[in-house]
Image: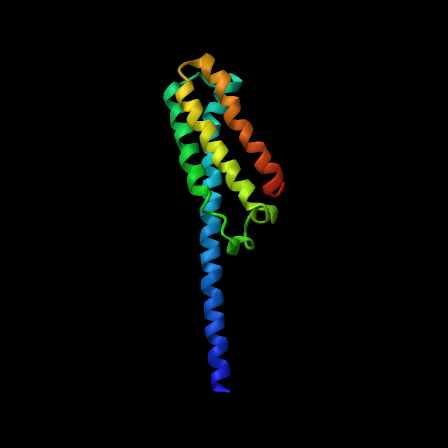
Length: 144
């Protein structure tokens, strides 16, 4: 009987550790998604004419998008499917597609970083970057 209780306690501790790890990854994933949103906010306002064009801010945003896309690829382990997450099951079922989309986002941001020199090139290139976001939101994120 003592062995059974000890085994059950060990399993409970193991499950608690796994859940804590899942929560940590999910929180990191949430922070990465917030970083994407934060990086898009300033240039988004610029593209709508709600804020003046500022090349340094655009370049910083593009750098953040690139770096966050790389980090985000590691934030979808299979053991983070459940918990307080907005990721749909499809994000894990079609993980190769999701990771490819993150690569595509990073590549679009890198390309735009090299191409944007002024407001005119910004207006031509910025939509190519943000157009990458909607597909993932529709397929891999719970609706708000």
